[in-house]
Length: 336
Image (cartoon, one colour):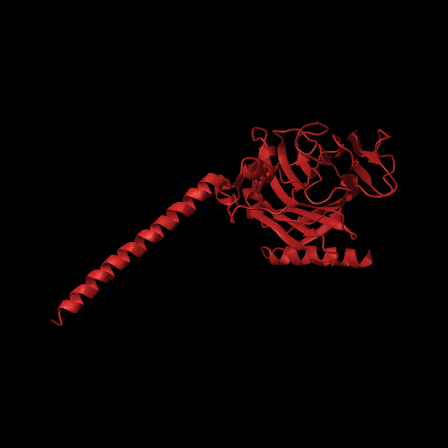
């Protein structure tokens, strides 16, 4: 644990200097953090955290869902967060009896205006207002395309489990059938299931820049997942985590959520120019989308593409032979 704490502190210090040259300090905010022994959580009104659905407390973790079908659970902070710049470190574990692609559905970490609302988005409501970071373990879109005898293009295929982020303003729906692709800010593949070592998710929001990193390889090293500037999140929203299972299932365990206040040195001009954010948004969202809206190619489409390609090649060969025949004939006549 000493090694991990040292690495985290070094990472935060390094990122603070390297991203934009501004120094910053971090302070653990215990009132917004969740860690063992989870004293009073779920049973005391004085606790800063509240359970929902099938979530339950053990001595080692908060189990958002058990490895059973059709379960959903969540844990939410009771206190709105009014920090301008912050960093959230999430210690979690996803494990179960299902084999690859026979498990689901995943978990989510939230910073939203709404709290304690059940729904279809990893156990939370759709059309949410704020930030959602999803650890998606089941490829719904891939299975849908397979059923339609379609396939991804190499540029648009994603490997699951997959971590992605989305910013909602209350009017944007999470597209479950497409695994959130239309509203995705960015993401990365993350093999997080049934690991023997700890899994960590790092979410940082500073100077309107959203950065997500992972430590899932057991090497005590963060690796980049996404880095998006121009993300505008209001203050006064709630942190939470949720998970859901459907026909397939997994244990989704939350071990800790630690929130750090980041103190960033700003000039007086920067403070004066910083207008209050009322509605979550992302600058130039249309330029950030990692995938275009491309339909998968059906088997029939692929067949005709191959057929016409072969016909084209055959036609070129025939034309080439005819031209070569004329050239040979004209050359032969020159010698008589």
